[in-house]
Amino acid sequence: MTRDARVYALVGFLAGLVTVGLGQVWRASLAFSGGCVFGIALVIALWINHQMGDIKGHLLRYSIGLLSCVPAYVIVVLILASVGQAAVQKLGVVASPDIRTPGLDMIIGLFVAVSTTAIFIEILAAWLTRAWSSRSLFVSLLFASGVVFAALLINAPLHSYWSLFGVLFPLAEALLMWRLGSRISTDSRHVYAKAVN
Image (cartoon, rainbow, N blue to C red; front, side, top):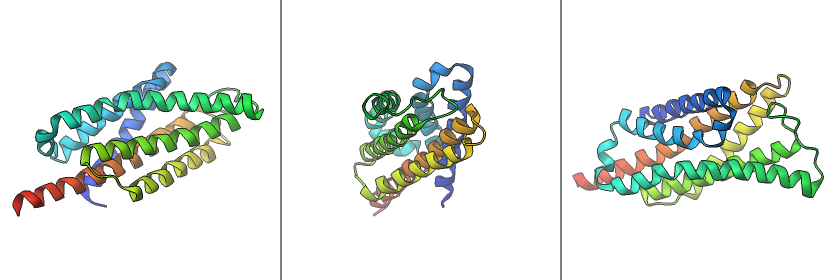
């Protein structure tokens, strides 16, 4: 793993902790703060990795991409709620008693939500780099599903906000930021190589 990739992963992890911390203070913030925090974290990672210069010629593209993090996150939250509700209404699944003890409705919703998030991250990467990568999408889907599984496993005996979301958000954001950063870094190297040659 390159230094740039480690920076993206660490900044993503910290962004996940900030999102969970905000949610601990005000639960409603979980419905919208993640996109803002992720977008800000991406800018910070670009700055730390000295890649801000790479976006000067693409400021509009990056601005639109960063701003899209907020509605994308809200859409993911709505999908989580809708899938959970559909599981209860259509499949007859018992509703989760609360956010700390996810039932089958929330588990299905979490897997669909992280899959949607991985797709949004790949769309963002494709928008920023002007190249789609099915391989990157597959890896993101695999990692995101693994994170949900790990968070549910860790939360099973504990049933606490931090054991579920304190694992889910930091790990998911670290892995997805790492994937996004890897795509951006690869694109930056290609752009630099073309400029030198």
